[in-house]
Image (cartoon, rainbow, N blue to C red):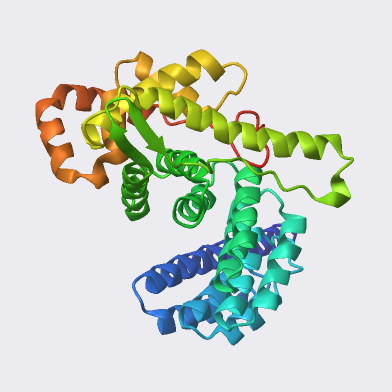
Length: 365
């Protein structure tokens, strides 16, 4: 009798294991169907799984995502809202709910969803990204930029917040020095994408448009405002830490400009890939000597490491190549060995950004 009960239990456990494997296979198949555009078939499979495992968080989330891809945002929200109290809930669920509200034009609900999520997952950069994009759609560009920078501070290895901060500073503000730093950090974190190419060209164009050769001994720069104006919140006028941060931000802008002025002189005949390579090499050397200890910067420290290995020329050409592809191809053809050495080293040695050495304008004096 005991043996019969034991065999019966084994059969139940075996059946449950096979069923779980089958359901997992169905979920995987549903995801593949979604990726290939067969959303209707994926919905059928996911509903089959949920009939057998109604508490499956993965199946529920993927079903909501399938309806999101189908652009049935109301149904997507309805499905995913049911999962908010699930024991396995993660930040991605809130991101999808917020995105669905945003697609429906319900930006207030979207922003509330992101804010609720950030209370639970304050370290997730994608939530700041989602909130920032929603604010941009509302044309609240200052608010969006502030959120992207908070995202950089919270999750310094998540690339997308750097991407948007770089674009906004370089295209829409008079403080392009911050955009230059954010843009290059982004390229180091996301090395091979369409966005990487876009930022490469943006950095090149920003150099070209903000370095004006007046004569052999005079160069005009416009990466930062000519005069640093500090606007203080009167309510915080007695806050020493607040005042120090405001003054430090102005100081950092002048540091970037002063180093750039030294790096540019003597003035080249024109600003192109060759002269920018020389300027960037000099910039790293000058910055390291004058400010490396007092004003450390994770990007310039990484550049100095590359320079010490004799790979800075190749790195500079990679960073700026999309600004002048013909010039890059010409340099590459003449420097194949140096390029190969750089690629091999660069592939194995990504920039190391931590919470201790991260760079963000609003947090680094």
